[in-house]
Length: 117
Image 1 (cartoon, one colour):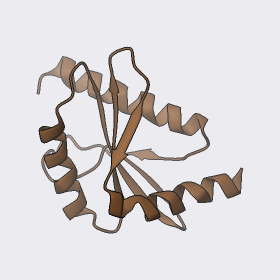
Image 2 (tube, helix red, strand yellow):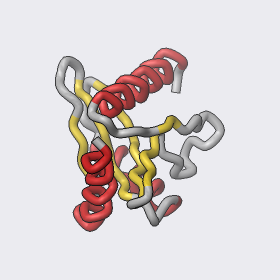
Image 3 (cartoon, helix red, strand yellow):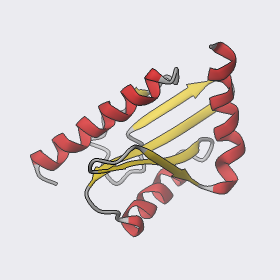
């Protein structure tokens, strides 16, 4: 991956982090330059209810099969988290998708933020 692509990815991570922060959802970035391909997420949201690991993509085109492989690696590396993909196509709003069986944990983690606010 070239530097312009890496920079765009990091800008996307920061943009998504700011977006969920504005919604009252905390997260922290994980610096993964050394961990590419090791199932390390871009961001993680953690509280007493559990954790959500985020793979963040900002792109022109969907690459489902590539992204699904990354999510599978991430899920194996962090089995106790709800694994989510956050993506934004050019000039479109952010979207998130994840595994159906992770949805109860995902909902519990987000519910904690609603009860705090």
